Amino acid sequence: MTKVSSAPLDATLTIDRGTVDPSKGIATISGRITCSMRSIVYAESVLRQLRQEVFVARGYWYAETLCTPGAPVPWSMDVDTETSVVFGTGPATSKRYYLEAYAGWHTWFGTYEEEVSSLQLV
Image (cartoon, rainbow, N blue to C red; front, side, top):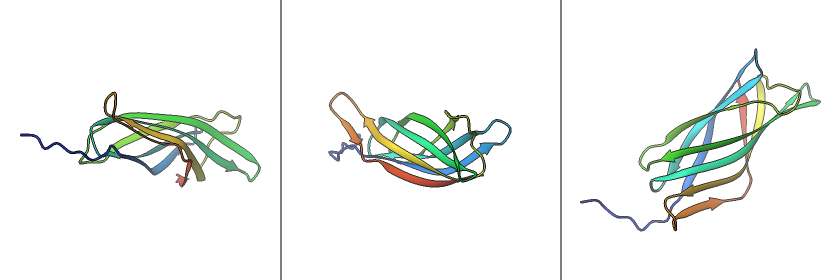
């Protein structure tokens, strides 16, 4: 017998780590996604880094993954710059525009409040 929950769908996304490939200037960010029921989780963000106190490296990223409750789901995304300035080691910020989760036609979750996360690219 399977236990049925009436709890609403909820999802979270964290950024735990950021690295950069110095030969290409591409950043890789990773973290975990959690959810309250089996769902597909989507997030869209922009990674931004001030370089030499003048120039901005900026790249948009989008994550999509299947989430099963009970254990955090790892995710990872390569982010290439959309400016002529490449990513390097040092502080950066990721601004998430939205986080959505869908567990069926009538069961969905969404938060559209911007969330800014600081990270260190190593």
